[in-house]
Amino acid sequence: MGFSSSFDFLFVQVVCEFDWEFDELQEFVDKLVEEEALPAEQADEFKEYVKEQVRAAKKANREAKDARKKAIEEMSEDTKQAFQKMKFYKFYPQPSPDTPDVSGVQVKQKAQKSTFNLFKSVSV
View (cartoon, rainbow, N blue to C red):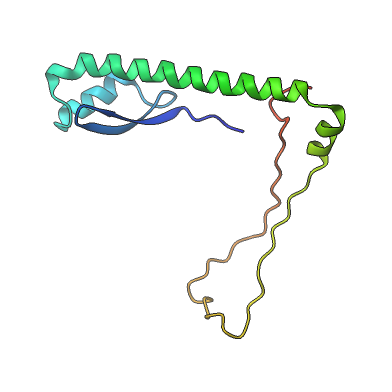
């Protein structure tokens, strides 16, 4: 399971999304001030608020990852093997006489095999 590096937040009248992996805080704030979405006199307070939110989001991600590792460590070997051997299947309904024709708006996609591994990032 991937953990997000972005979060949505509300600061006074500013609603936006900040991604700490891709966004540079100073540039982010400068852009908001330039677009007049954030008053210039609140820029420093806003930066501190974003830093606080980033710390909280990183802590939540770290705690979730630790909880996941702990849950995997506490699993029985039978349960671990069951998860590793688990397969997921997709079933698509067959058209019936009363099904509308959607072939004109349907996107043709190539079949892809999807895999999910619960133990991908954790060594067992």
